[in-house]
Length: 211
Image (cartoon, rainbow, N blue to C red):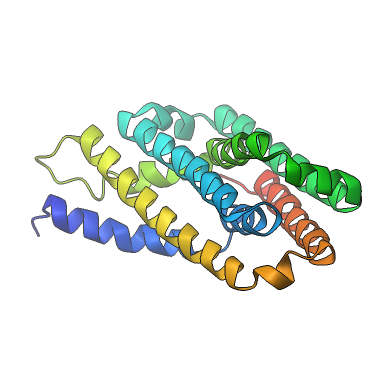
């Protein structure tokens, strides 16, 4: 069956949507930012996540991450770095949730939090080699024979980014509806503890997972 660019993008969108909707680190980071910081911080975090996704898509399309997939050592190093970062991030959230003054001070630091939110989303995705491996697996399947693989890979990554942003908006809107209850100091502390625990759990899972 002949595959057109349009049909390839639509088919990939269905696969990427399922991947986006599965709860994970990205969902936890966006919800945490929306509750503890603000809607704008959560959106900036989502932009960082999207930047990481797009970077992996472009790198995979260029063929560089094929080396990562072929090299067990490179994959393991990046996996352990990502796992360590997730554990550190989760531990930091739990620690801050136990120190009320630090948490209140963090809310005032709006300019820094914007960069921190973006950087957290970006680094979390860049240190996740499974995103690169995902693109390595899907790009050949969704690239028509007469289309440049690099351009198609970038196009697929752009579709993934759009879906991620749309889901982030839904998450942020949902958090806003429950904003009054979730923004209380007690709720914020528990949100940090839950999110931190989730991140640590994902970090341990990533460290123990086999490629």
